[in-house]
Amino acid sequence: MTLPIAITQGDPAGIGPEIIVKAYRDAPDQTQGCFVVGDLATLRRAARVVAGDAVVLPVALLTDAQQALNVPPRCLPLLQIGLAGSFLAPSAPVPFGQLGAVAGRMAGDCVVWAANAALRGEVAALVTAPLNKAALSMAGAPHSAFAGHTEMLQALAASHTRQAIAQLPVRMMLANDELRVVLVSIHLSMRDALAAVTFDNVLQTLLITHHAIKAVLGRVPRIGVAGLNPHAGEGGLFGSEEQHIIAPAIAAARLQGLQVSDPLAPDTVFMRARSKGGQPGDFDVVLAMYHDQGLIPVKYLGIEKGVNVTLGLPLVRTSPDHGTAFDIAGTGQADASSLIEAIRVARQLSR
Image (tube, rainbow, N blue to C red; front, side):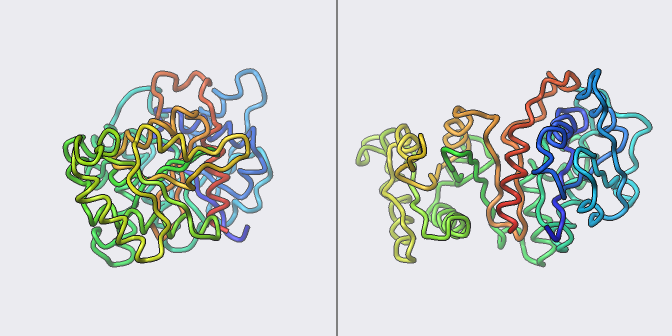
């Protein structure tokens, strides 16, 4: 590695700091060359929680991201962003499991610093531990303007490239070793998500998916498309969106050389795409029409294996496929598997 990978600590009241410590303890090969963007007191507390009666992993304070490349294994390299003036760290860590504006501001500030570092070309990739959307909203401006990581990163990237946000469309992909799913819309109410199923949005999502997955596979990907309605509308009996919106977008994508299926029944397309026992599925990725349609099958296969990848950004960003888990924060029970997988995928995508 010639550039380090930044890992944001997430909401300090949640499990983010703990799974980061576990990743450094359990996967030194994956975390080598990575560093944490966060708060010293918070990371040290997490290290004590994870260690229990064992040896506590030491924290190495960095003054520059590049120093992370030379930190020994099973040592926690930390860039305290408060030293750069991004936020004033509290005198003590915020309480575990409690929603708060301070925690939301700290989590948001870490993302802003790390994303800007990635956009400047100072880090190879960005891995984000979970933040809490309600805490982010409580944090006030500028963080309260964003529903989550994806929207924040899109705005930061658009500002960096001097574009309007609408000129930098992004999409969420959830993936594990069995299934990849890309969403037409992300954090919208069900009513708004249905309205977002337009010709332009479906075609744009197909194009973003095609270019991103082609870069990973080195060939044209096979894209399966989930219909919006039961049985993909059953020829118009259960809805006409497949006929009037989705199929025309597919036809336009095919004219540009994309390999895309017809709209398929959403209750079976994910099973058809699933890779099992070393055998690939019918599709390399599935296009889902809205958030829960796509995320339920991926998470059902095992939330500890899932990775969230933001497509369309001028930087590599991955994250674990779970939230802050306030109910178990501070207990040491949190599973770091998804974070470790997110780091592995970030390494792969940033080569």
